[in-house]
Length: 203
Image (cartoon, rainbow, N blue to C red; front, top):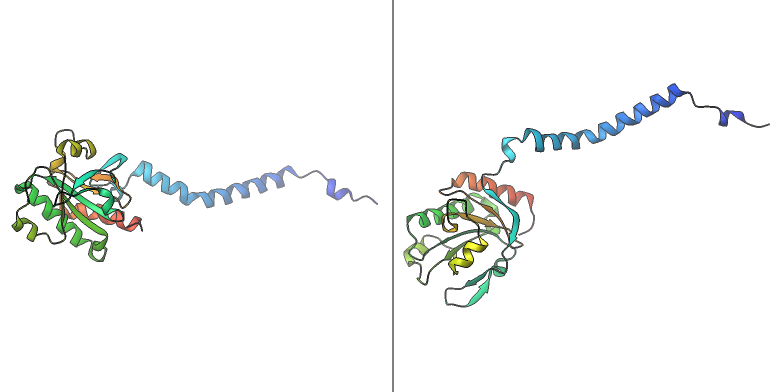
């Protein structure tokens, strides 16, 4: 005898309830994703806004040419694997240069146990040699000589400033990522850098 139950029409009310249940399950699973997108793109909480300006698109500077203290040729590839805090200034390091070197030193120290992941680099923009007294205040600081024109092309400044007035962040893969404001606040600089260190296990 043929079993006609298998071919019986489905009750529309049962089908509708099943679809509603399935939709509710999908919405429940998707809710966290929807909420995160809404928070990120619409509400834009203060906590996710960077203090530094993002360099968009990121610029690869691993091949950026530099000279060592003895005149030896090199590139930023020598720092691959490290997060870099970079500034540029003439060798005599006027007051604003000394302020930036101080900012970089303090920001690195404030990262605590992560500080070994961070390297500070001073790009000297003229043929002079940095004063020993300045270098003595910044143990571990690397200084290299650069061509000022090449610096301006590779490290973009704000619309009304020069590259020699900023501190930049370069990631461990050699990408220029961020530019801090002129006369930046070390505490806010540290906050940006700490976010990057937490988010990335590179370097």
